Length: 250
Ligand code: NAD
Image (cartoon, rainbow, N blue to C red; front, side, top):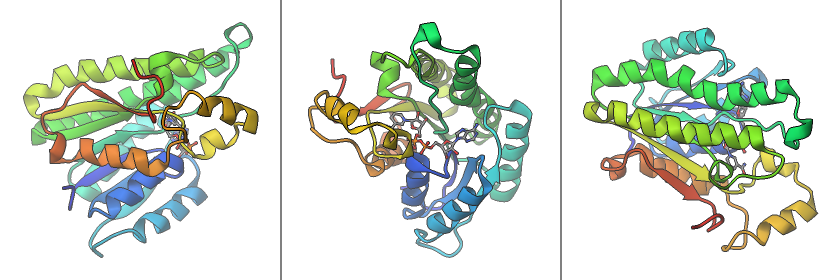
């Protein structure tokens, strides 16, 4: 399905991004990951390498802040030299800076929009050019159920994630004639370092909102990503696949 494909995953040093990288390596892909912590990046590379099915699969990490356009362009150009192509781009890097709107600091608004949304512009505009030349490609943007249903204390996060959806649908229309598919995955509550900070009371009340009655696993997201990255989804573009145990269903 993705044997030999070249994949770039932002935020691949932790949580969902790292587990997508491991899962894709176990299906034969070459994987490049972006993150901002070199120690965690090198550790992630070792874990991803351990999941390879062939010794010729390349895995590497670049320390780059996805919210900064020029360094992202330079990092993507390095990957294009190393891999010769990027077949699959997964925009996964993301942060939260939660507070109620009336108390939200301007820097917390700006930071979340820059890391979660501007980053998608930074990567897509460079990768899309290479994919257009190749006349194929898959772009997968990891948004959130919160971008669809909202959440008190997360106006910045919800706006960034809803913004990703509008961005993805527009780009899907721009790139469709070149054989490039652009889709989103909207995870619900997934067990990762991002949700480890929730206390037990919060987790209990969240579980009441989830028809399947459990938090999601990173593998639940990796499996949806494999579908969108592979030829199984060649006739799917501009869509949002919600992987949330039924949370937020219409
Ligand atoms: P995480 O905190 O475990 O991982 C986030 C990753 O993003 C890390 O690798 C981190 O290094 C990277 N990152 C953060 N800022 C960066 C920057 N400026 N430049 C480059 N990399 C940066 O979080 P996670 O739970 O694995 O979340 C991954 C994605 O999934 C995020 O976009 C998040 O919003 C989304 N998501 C998570 C959940 C959940 O329940 N965990 C739910 C919905 C959506």
